[in-house]
Length: 205
Image (cartoon, rainbow, N blue to C red; front, side):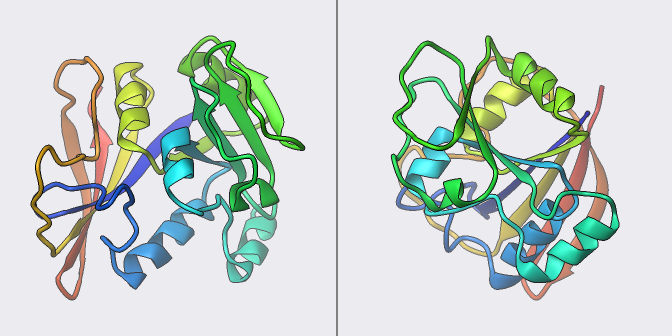
C-alpha cells in the first residue's frame, strides 16, 4: 500500500484561512490535485475537512477515460475518517462512491453511505487493501495528517508552497497535533509555475 499526502500552505505556513484551504493555492494547483486523484484508488479526508468545504473525492470527466484505460474504476473511492461521527447529513461528497470510517462507537447520521467501524487507522488501511486499493491520496486535514504520520503510514508528501502571507495567531499548519519523532523527508521533485512552488518528498524510513 502506498499513501501520499497532498497539501497546500502559505509561505508563513498557514494551511487554512477562515477554516478552509480554499483560495490558498492557484487554479493550476487545483488542476494538479485532480491529476493526483486520477492516479489513486482512494481519496482520503478527515471529517473536519468535509465539514469545512463542499468538496468531493471525484475527478473531472476528462480524466475518467484515462483511469478506465489503466484498469481503474471511473472514480476513486472517497473515504472519510471520523471519531466523533459529526458529519453533514447531506454533502456533495456522498454523490460518488464513499465509505465513512468511524474510529469509535459514535452515531453517524448519514444515510445511503457505507459506514465501516474500525479500531484504528491501520485497520482502515487494511480494509481498503481488502477492497483492492493499492494507492491512497490523503488531502488532510492537518489532524488526520498527524495521525497518519504518528502511525507510520505515510510514504510521500506533495506540497504546494503558495506565494502568500496570511499571518494570524496560532495558524493551522499542514500537520497539527500528534506525537512522533521528527520525520525526515527526501526531495524527489521540484516544479515552478509563475510564483508557486510544487514539491514532492518521500518519507525516509
